[in-house]
Length: 346
Ligand SMILES: [Mg+2]
View 1: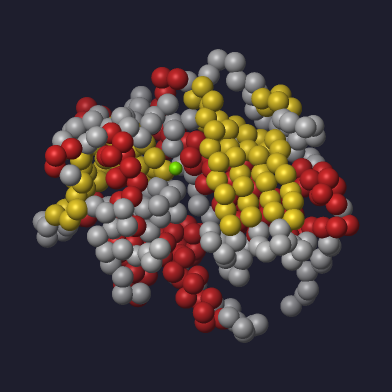
View 2: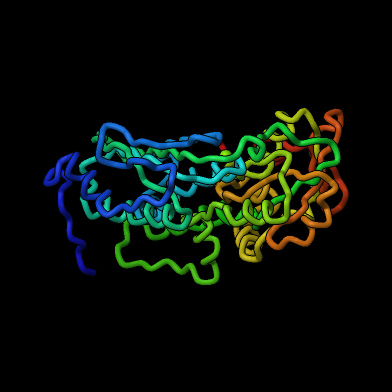
């Protein structure tokens, strides 16, 4: 194996590094008046509401660089913030990127990270308008802020779900969590060995879902195209169960969802069986799917049912009925923030 070239960050210095990483960025949004290069970026949002979301990722807590390539990490870090703007039914426009780096990282590493970041931004027409880099004594810390917009009457909050609304989910669930299990398992196998190529064949989808999540701007567009405005919406970062509890609690309603209706990919089911896990538990509590969870009025039933990539998983009830999953054999389980069979230790 050829050793990668390694240039110490100190050769460029902090400002040199920022200049190097942000050169050639072309601004795409009308709302970006001025990007990187001054004390602050200048944005203009004269006639619309502005959405702001921020996220902090810590090495060892949120990601493990032994199996996450830096390019994927950059991509994912941008994507999870972009996803939060879509979850408000908005359009993402700008991000700022702040990094704390230890000496372990070279300029080439940062080029990789930025390549992923730029790819995610290009896919969603988002401008990188600023940020900061500083040194870290331990691992890598990444803070990204995303700014977007939405007309006042189009913003969708978590608190608008009403009794009889349909509960909908985009894509499929649990695959990102299964991808993480797979990577953790392989990590144990090849730790300390140099020339081991773990066999991921037949499980590519799980890895992709974990390493390269996609924010569902396409679903937001589709819904708007059909004239559907969700009554409540969130992106699924912590698992269906926990997000649904957020929506129900904040909307003061209850819900019923059906196990048989939860969208699963075949590879997710196979992997769960391999690991002796309940696949429904993984879908409910796995997290990091970055799919959209939303509610629509019953009147949209026909339109929603015909839309590809969206599944109706249940309905909203009176608050007195609580929040529950109905299993395949008709039993009711109360939804818990970490599932009825918790996966997590913390
Ligand atoms: Mg969110």
